[in-house]
Length: 90
Image 1 (cartoon, one colour):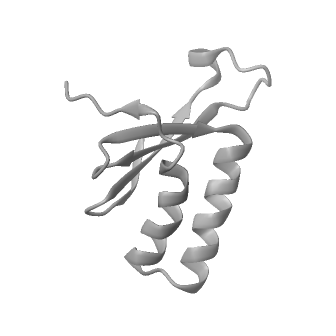
Image 2: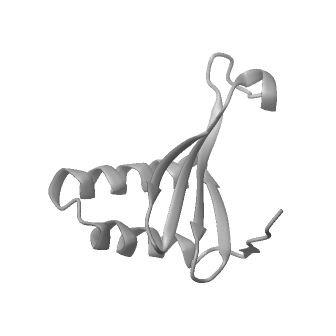
């Protein structure tokens, strides 16, 4: 797990799972994705696969042009609109 982004509104963590942890269909290629926490709405979402690749590409495009926190927050907000899982403190 690696913390990628943390603002007043969002936290983004990259999760990498090796083959042995998840029974990956393609040997040598682990699974993973991004956990996105919307702090204000108190919801989280985990994205993987194609959606995670789109997320990664979009974040890289912002980083290449306008790396302001507002630009990142606006982009991340598009994904947290999909969040259904309530954030639970434990």
